Image 1 (cartoon, helix red, strand yellow):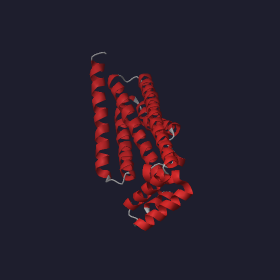
Image 2: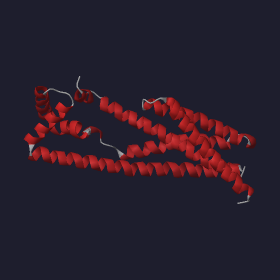
Image 3: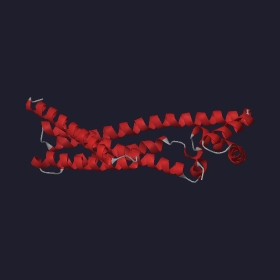
Image 4: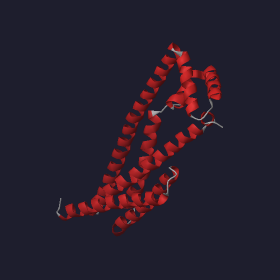
Length: 236
């Protein structure tokens, strides 16, 4: 089966789903690390549960809304670019169909088809849906699955929120003396999971990804806790 045929049977959709899943895992990871760093910093300065809860909730909301807004803007720009590219391709098909047919055949030849097969495939794809054929083969766009900024925004919001809930609950639920060690252990365990998952989704060896993830999270918690402790000792 040729590459273009595999795209028609759904490999492209699978890739899109994997990208979304990877983005969700990374969003949850951001929520874990940023909120853990925030609450650990506050925990270094005070043991007051209400202060920890307030800081954690503020960080969760600020982070999730910021992620959602940023993702909405980014994906909206991507969708605008995709629509502009499709509009330009539609214009070219209308104004110079023969040149576009030859271009499609050449692209198929570059993908490994023989000259005769590439020309026949280009003609058949053009007869079926010329714009769709050029969108997939030339632009790498599926016209039926353009980027949706609202989906991206909600996905980022939810992923960050789910990740941020772990350190928030871990810092406010245990008794005073156990808050820091429970939070640190919970966060590091979660980072092992998200690091392993993101590596597997990217078909990469998990060892280095897990080590980087855990080291980054540990550093963030250690630095913010130390800063909070210094500020608390100084009476700030």
